[in-house]
Length: 446
Ligand code: C2O
Ligand code: CU
Ligand code: CU
Image 1: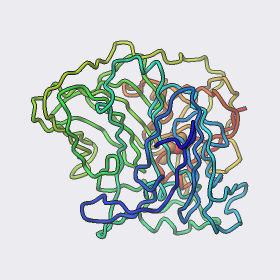
Image 2: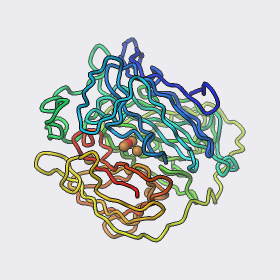
Image 3: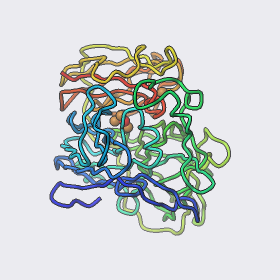
């Protein structure tokens, strides 16, 4: 994305045609008319304004995922940019309509991190993201600039998501989603087809199916984002190889951690370095998803084309992330099906009714539990995973995060810091079908 003036961007959401599958035309709803939308390069301490203009046939709300953003620009689900000629009556109590354009203000006061943005419209986030309303935003800072990490062409932001297609190339999103799910009332009912979320059989990386990247036999930095509605991945390298993790959702780790496999649930990011000098020139290396069989088990390929000089390195000390503050409270959030809806603490989403009121500048332990697999995401607050089932967390849970996978009947304790802004934010399941089926709650930072 290119700024149109100092710290100012303008992006238009519109219907456009893309060639995703060879020879076929797919209608996308894209930021800037592309899928994914443009990648924003942001710098810590340089605030930006993004004017989002909505030329789609539906209302939208834009959320910067992982952003420490004031509440008025956080993409609250009923804070909508409505298209020209939209009906004047709000569908939900408290709904706000911005005709055609809304200016979102991002202070960008946070550490370097891999963020992303996507639609967050009440009840319709899943189908609207599926049609293309998502993109990446990279925050950089001086701490990161000083590191000799791979950069330029050797730094690859990789937005991974699955989609299903009709024979004519259009996106296939199950239609039954609309049953009992009108603009007024009836929302939040469980629907057999959606209960587990919607998955597709085609894996896209930056909008292209199973791409192959040519790489030199050097280190590469891969910024992995799972932007899928509901699919989880366990990423591995074939015919073998390891990932050196340097960052998590909310920025650089204190020190690198090496993994054979990376589990990544919807909304999560892993910032990793892969050293292709470990493979003979000519090797085809595949990023695979060990959780899927068949075509969906392949994510993308790399072909090692030649040797090349490499002055990059992964230092033993990467950053000085904020330490763990002492928690002032403990709360529980239970994610489960209750009376035919996906609920948090027994409630379907009630906009404007906070389930918690943490104080600004404090930290709390949030105990997350559930009946099914739920990738739990918290707006504004970053957290560290303290424990899983009372035991130390997995090596892949390291760092400050904003999304954590909570497995069936698992108990995950996180330490969350409420910094930067007061106001109303959300926590929710990032399985987007669960989110639309009401698995969302407000909290108010006071
Ligand atoms: Cu990425 Cu509230 O979501
Ligand atoms: Cu978010
Ligand atoms: Cu869920």
